[in-house]
Image 1 (cartoon, one colour):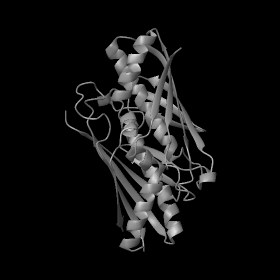
Image 2: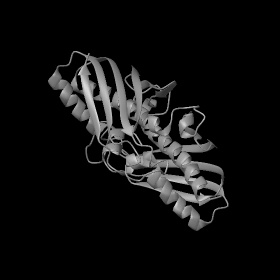
Image 3: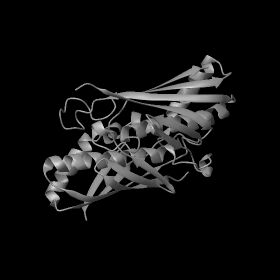
Image 4: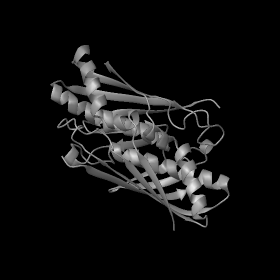
Length: 146
Length: 146
């Protein structure tokens, strides 16, 4: 199967805000006032959690379907602690990002506990966003002066 | 500096779509039809790229300000290849997520090349989203049957 290529283009609207185009969709990423923004959208690290929630949902239904059980309802809480000190340049002791992330999936289903356990393992393994967080992903940042 | 806690709550609207609440913001994460969705929003892996773009923007301005130069305009292209075979359960050879991610920052500034090089290094180090991608982040997925 060939690789798929995904791409977005972001235009800065303020020192804390970008308008990001992905195909026909526009996503506004901003910061709350205490992190220097105008609060016109969720912030970058909330976008990470949204990405993870979306991924767990789609892979969750896909794997349940393959395993032969039905999901009638699914809610997912995703959260994690992050020390903003490094981001703000105040201390370099802690890592910049989330120290850990927890996703609580509440599933309305008749699958038993053993089945759900296997389901979660497969979902974690096959979710692209989980993979990119749990395992190291090379990120190359290039800067060009206009 | 104490940790900040970020959190979202996602409600499944279809097997491929969630509505994600982060504070007062709602983000719709869906998939295009070829990946099983109704295409009502960007997809999970595009959300990852949007998160990275937003992060590079806010940290970019912050660090430029500290280094004493001005950014008049900033555009960021973010892209990467991903093989959907594992996500779709067709092959387990490749990893599930992006194999690598590239961010091209086009900066309108009078800073010289040497300064921009130092700037990019600091931005990469202090951006929470870069950190969570480049370095391993523990993700705990819990499932509860309703």
